[in-house]
Length: 393
Ligand SMILES: *Cc1c(COP(=O)(O)O)cnc(C)c1O
Image (cartoon, rainbow, N blue to C red; front, side, top):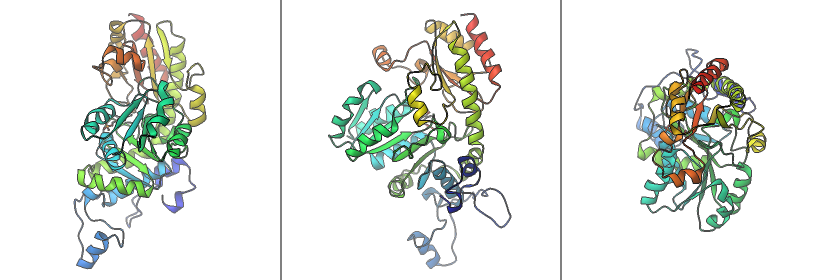
């Protein structure tokens, strides 16, 4: 983190951290749209190659001012020593697991579909021990840690049942056994939750979601200590998972408004969740900000805002729930989240499509669930949209 921003608040960091001062006075880092950088002498080149001085070299390595500028900002967001940007959230997770999880990974709770597949299929095909624990099976964690597993990975809040896990309590157990704790903080964002402050070692994001925030960037990021990030860096370099400098600059631009966007989404989501909770055609509203929600107390303890993601359960069957989703006008059906536009998806048709019925039941995912990602529109309009969609089912 830049010295001058160490004490600054999150909004100030979002705007200023990492931005390169330049002779033209541009308030943001110019886009360095170069694959390579040139040197006057062989000695100059070797100084950078051998790490004697920082400098630009080759974009795939991340040694490009647009990339470094963005990574400085990203590290500042999560109070991390360092950050690495990737071409997608999955690229970030793949490099993370390959660099630091080869002796075994425990995944707690539900996770993003791609993450589950990566762990279950690709990592297992490399003979990496992978274990899955539901939230209700946490008492088995210590036993697994004794088998030499080196990473505990989870999301909180989770997708789509919005389960909340105690980051500090799990980190304490993992650390007692020498394991690292990596949190996918995509749903919460650094505005609402700071996993590293709560004891996590590594934070990963799909920057495609809230960090990008406008459905126009695919990117990922990993934040952590210099040592861990250095190990992941070598994998990223040779797996070639670098985003283009233009994408890096666009993401830097988006992050300047992160706090404004997420706070607005927090407020609207709470308003919507509160309104829906009273609706006769809604069986359940899963939202950390509702006092009736099972994880509410824990969420209050470890989160500073409750986020823009709500899962509702319609009082009806699969067909009726499809009708609600299809009736929505402002909320558009899409498998993504965290954007300006409000989006919705039925988990059984997207993130958890194709899972056997008993597995869905075990995970508490029902055909009547709709996951809502609340955008920047007026909350009143979004509530009205949901009400009209629920009317004729
Ligand atoms: C979308 C998502 C990912 C994967 O990110 P991509 O940018 O699509 O690769 C990982 N974790 C969570 C929680 C997500 O929502």
